[in-house]
Each structure stands twice: as structure tokens, then as C-alpha cells.
Image (tube, rainbow, N blue to C red; front, side):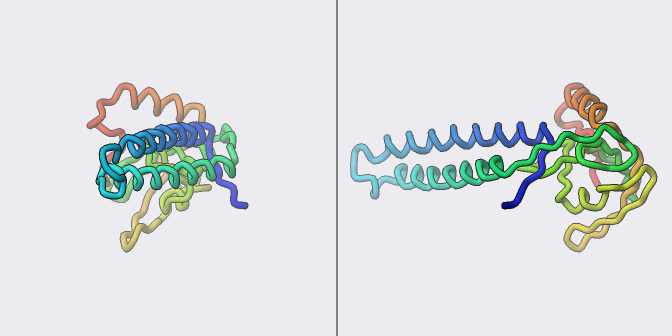
Length: 177
């Protein structure tokens, strides 16, 4: 059976998503139960919509629970010589823009400031050293980046959390590329 690598933070996000999906499933079941009361359910649009919602949330909940049952939670190694799982990294693109990320394992959803090792960029920078230039491709777009700085996992988490608290939502810490 496949294992899915998560950092502790990534695994906590997965558990939160399972909880949210279960709540949505419960709502859909309750909606289905109250729909169609005045007529037979098959002629009630609310019943049909609730039935579809129930199916979708059952599927999503099952998928997330399957991920959790095959999750491997990895404690990041406290080092900053190479880009590894859990490390913070500051990248510079060929146009001079910079981005800051914490390298995450399996990503349940895209999160600001987190980059999956399974993404094209994540694969490209995994194992890189400071100053090293790496190339990656998304679709037909080829990009080049330089590793400007690698942060210890503990420092990256603290620094990025502080930046998120102190930065207004519309002023993202990542530059547009």
C-alpha cells in the first residue's frame, strides 16, 4: 500500500479537512432527510441536490480517511544545507521576483507559503543547495530559479507564521511570477 509523507503540520491539516468533510456530510444527510417531506423525494429538487451532496461528501471523506490511514508523518531534519522536507526556502526567479516556501510532503490542498515536494517546483528544488540554479516546467512554460536561502525547519515555521500574522491578506509574501 502506498504511503503518503506529511510533515506534522501537513498531517494536522489533513485531520482538519477530515473533520470539515464529516461536518459537510452530516449537513447533507440532514438536508436529504428534511427534503421531500411534502411530496415524494424523487420529485423534489432539494432531495436530489442533497442526495448528490451526500454522495460527494461521502466520497471526499473516504478519500481523506484513506490518506490518513496511509500517512507517514515525518519530523523534518533540522538542517539548512540542502532543501529538504520541512525546510524553508527563499527562491529567486529569472525575472528577479522572489518567493518563500516551506517544503511540505503530500498536500491535501494548496496553502499559502507551503510547497509540495510532488509539485514540479518542489521536485526541482528538493536536494538543492544555496546558490544553486534549478529548472522546472509547468505545462509548456519552462522556468529557472535560484536558491537564495535555506532556513532551518524550526526557524522557517516561526518566521513564516510571524509574517502571516503581520501581513495583510492582500499583501502576499510571495511575489507574482
